[in-house]
Image (cartoon, rainbow, N blue to C red; front, side, top):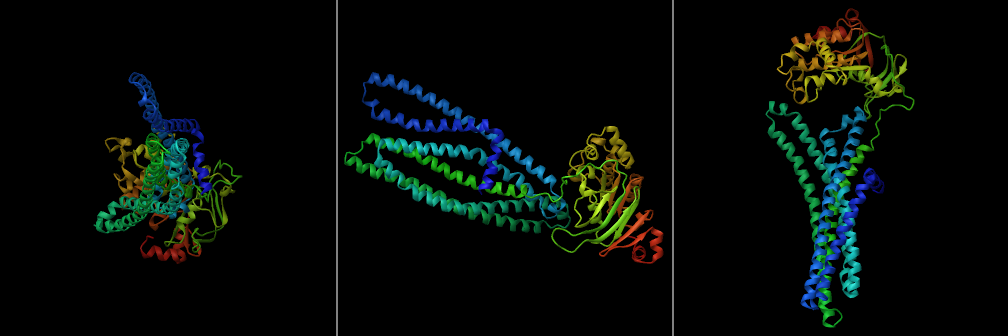
Length: 578
């Protein structure tokens, strides 16, 4: 906890000027709250016994003084409420940028197990609660401590016995708060986990809403959500049980302090040890004293929310990317496209069976290489190792004789283009999505890339042409149109190495023909890997590799593999697709 608190406090560093000014005005506000009861004591114990004319003259001065205090207190609260909140928003901005940047560095192995909705919860609601704590926490503590200490000093000056009567209950009160605080912290952490689970369910449902409706399974989804929502409610009930106990207990102790002072004060008045004016002043200060205690009660909830949010924030930030640039990494330049797999083996981080085992392969620059095999044979995995989406477990992969683990990730991936079966298009326009391949491209370059991908004609058929908004994930486009935009994106990138991962398997025959033509145009004079679902699309490949769970079982051209009468020949004559 100490380590996390130190890291949390580090976010104040860029904003220390605002922070100390905020603390100054919090101090002024607390001092004003302590001053007003003293003015009341002066009026009740001294002023009322003067002559009428003197009372009026002094009341004018006191009134002006109180108006000045009120104006100063008003400005202090304005600064705290405005600039203090802006400081908190800036810290939230910094944290959100930091965690988003960190998430960009995490590899596929992290996202294989992560849920988008839960990650969203950490970037939004968790961070909001953290910054609410970072803004309000220090000022609440300063205000409360100043009021409590100031009240103690002033009360001691009024009457020692009354002060003892007020403070004798405090040790029990603080012990009670300490015990409940520990229970509340565990409960609020559970709340955070449940909120993240619900966010994950909502994201999953809304992303697949078309599947839900196509199967008319709204009732099933409602029931699944109800289970998660019930868990959230149970966690909330548990935390609020502790919070209710905490608030009720602190409220009782606060009242007991006042009752104790009244009882002891009455006894002291009876014995002539204190006068009625001092008791009235004392009771006013008891209000000033108990108010910050209630503030600390609210702060306790705020602290639980903020700190558990920060713990979850640090859980992500403390995950080290398992794929990053080596200390001696160099830029990959002047790429020809020769690729060598040297005794490559791979298994996923979950410790399952090896997906690839001792694979060796030499691919010449400009070659057109097709990969076929049953599901789970490792075709996609093999191709994912080239841009280092995952790192090899054993062996090495080289491009132009350079081990890819010793070149920078950015330069490596800048020279590799991928067209996948599951096309991802971002919300925005057609132009913006093609531009993703080369953000600084000119409009002429974007149009040329679209023409090469056989996409220009259908783009121009829309009223807004390249400025057409395509909706979430390109929902307004057909499968073939989305695929051609993804190909245009790679044309614009103009990489030396291409990977086509079953890029036409989900298309109808007409769309497949157009997309296949675009792919072949894109692959010309580039080192190309094609993961084939339909064998009819790879008959012109210079070499076809047949992958099985034991590695590369067969290799050769379409004709050579048919002549062998092996695995490929059986697959081809079975249905011509895989």
